[in-house]
Image 1 (cartoon, rainbow, N blue to C red):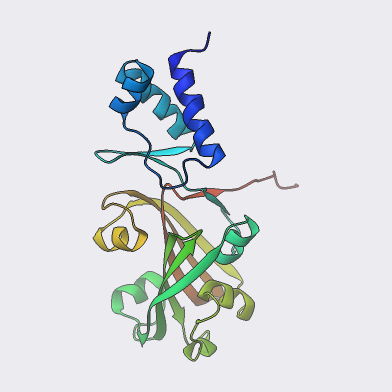
Image 2 (cartoon, rainbow, N blue to C red; image 1 turned 180 degrees about the horizontal axis):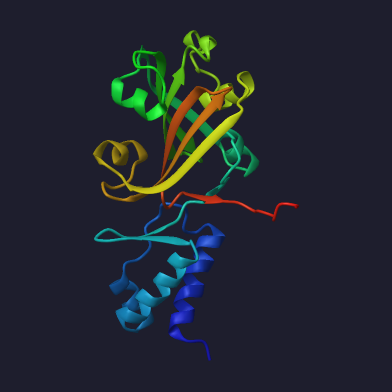
Length: 235
């Protein structure tokens, strides 16, 4: 005999898979499901927790549970732009340039990047949108002494990451992946809640010892994941 817990799990899963409940839709709250299935809220909570672990739903304190958006995998060590990743995974991608400014590198950032203070840079902020929902904020610095062509590039039709991969060879790269909480500005742009968990990828690339670009991508934690397949190196 199928348990009530399993019935709740299967019924909710079926509605998500069939498309009756779409990404972002709010599902009935615990007390409504408890009344419908004539069971305890603890049983409902157990089923919803299992669905969340499966990646089917996202549970948020005070606001309820929502159908999770399809996640895009980013290969951990590959350098690939978000637009290509999305298209390869069968998703629709577009982007918006939120800010574009030529300025001088400040003292703190110069020390962080091991580059001369007062070096000329192009500072960009972009929003990447996948399947109609914000997927990443891109905050990028391009060193204009290493990439002078970027000075005149508007990036109106091609994302900065894709443009750089096509235009500038790199010889070294460094990745840092970390978990962060969305501040007020990030939450507003990504259409999530302040304090919500996000994934951050920080990347710096070099060409013959000179920094080409430094970029931070911030993704909503429920819409993105990093993944990779690795094999032992041959001796």
